[in-house]
Image 1 (cartoon, helix red, strand yellow):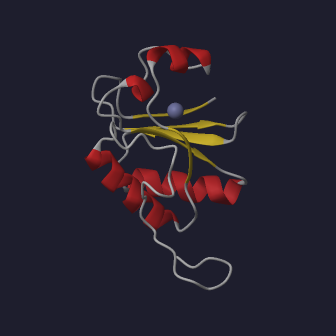
Image 2 (cartoon, protein in one colour):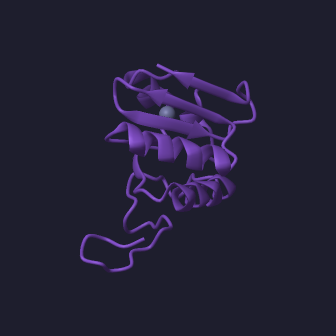
Length: 126
Ligand SMILES: [Zn+2]
């Protein structure tokens, strides 16, 4: 992937750049899937949420037992700015094998997770 200056930028997530990922709790298999999803989508993935404590998840409108609270954590929220970007992100996530994908149109983000304890496969819009 090239930035606006034409330089090649890494297409994989790194601790230095992706500060919203809790690198001590990330599910490494889900992270590989996320890298593949971004490669397939061909658009930036701006992660807005990853691991959350049950209290934090409740505070931001989630549930204290949602996929963001599981360790290792394979749940990610990805911001999008328009419908072309949301299409490409969802396409990449499904291609990469994320079994649970949801769109939050109000907050313009896409949720994806690999939880095996929550109903799967699922796709939702809220
Ligand atoms: Zn989420």
